[in-house]
Length: 339
Image (cartoon, rainbow, N blue to C red):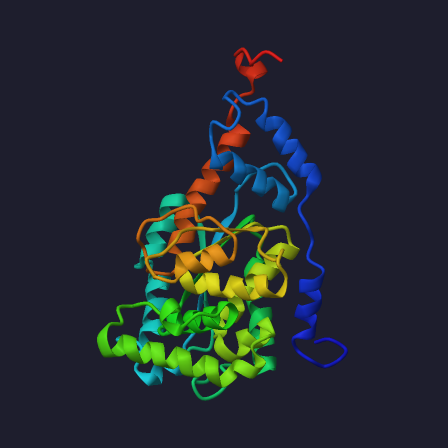
């Protein structure tokens, strides 16, 4: 904790002094790219990804220890009947991840990705945001710090994902608080909400943002009042990755809302991040555009679990492999274009 005794102060300080890209690594990667056996720009966005990896890892583009980190949390707002599934499903899915039975397990196996699942006090849901703050400042800061541990074991590409019944309601509330509009602009079906359930979800988002409105000019207050433990942990993980030169791939609508908190606090906070995919959740593309990003994939998915980010990691790995493994014109004995 900072000397002032306010739990968020350390995070505010980190957000004010974020490290920038490594210009030397970027120049070296660009120089090599110009010598590879292909026309300039022929690999399109794969070349951009390779340069991004170099800039934010500080070394030649490579992915050798990729990790998918899933953060799981429960939400008090579910008592308002905003989802067709009970909160107990969060714990059941965490157990499914551990047993290898979820979609994310299969994608991780396919792309040779590590997987860690973080259970965030599932027996203790956050406060109902329609009536009170989700978390105290102390609890929110502690959860962000816990999320920072996701990169502690060493990784060179971090994929951020989540699990939490009710958390698309939370994401919608965060987006409404940050970007305005109406609740209907940001509320979608999530795990299958429709009819009266969807209507209650919209009302809950409207009520929550109205209740906390006087405090929502501060992004970290948006996080603690409207967010959840998995949102706070993902924000912490993204921030820690920046400090440790680890590029990040962000997953779907909920993960994007966590990233949006950091972007609101510092416009450069997500420069080391890619958006893995645009989900089928109606507000996701709009949220991505507000971040100034372009998703790598658009597959109509809306599962969460880090699945879109993990699929995108396969593309990032391919970009790094092309950059490092392709022969140069000189090595291959292929004529380069004339100067």
